[in-house]
Length: 173
Length: 173
Image (cartoon, rainbow over all chains, first blue to last red; front, side, top):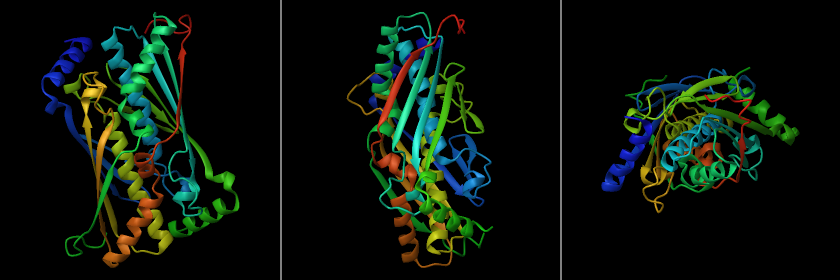
């Protein structure tokens, strides 16, 4: 089945049964080094780490680089989905994302500073035979429906629970 | 230098010169398959992809799994930094993050649905010799200073630019 046909079939299945549209994703991170974290999500495993300049080993991207990677890849895939949906021919798409970060909050130097990104810049480059107007319409549709862009632009309710592991079950590690 | 000493030195350097605290991170994603995306950020390269059930190849985590991985790993590292800062002994920390997603918006079935996560649940498990109250204080400090948690809980201003690549410079690919 072509991707376009699969998109159409997926849309029909979600329209027929809204319960199928609700998915729960998860990820688990465990600190295994100074700042090195082993991550598992679905069938995939990878690491996060801070750079050496911040006391880490620099073995992998840091958490906020993963956040930017999430936005860049989500934009790229949403271009693919909406190009198929709207019948826009798209030869290539590259998304570059930049984020400004002030380290003072995270390190407890200035509680007035914002802990997370203070601004994000997204640069999308598309190639293909359609008019500029058609790609502008595609970009508008993508921005209205991109899951990661929504995460960046709007607040999400977060609940947090803290558990103290049973010391007997968790010998000093 | 120990991590605790490096954290103290980093704090002093950021307090002495706020300009050093401003960092710009970036990531770039290029669609290279049906939904497969090559990502580069800093010195690191990895992939994102959708699962086979959504028309992808399932070769890597999908963008929203990376967003959850960002939150889980950022929490874990912020526990490390603030345990050092507050003098709390921490033997281990594991952070599990779950997110609810409604696929109807992304696939254009229901514009009333939210594109991104509708709720996030964070479960933190710590081990160590301190009292429950001391770990609760640590958790509160982490949640007030964790960059990724701030991204999830608060809106970030995003600007987006769209470029149409010169077809002569980008032969049909």
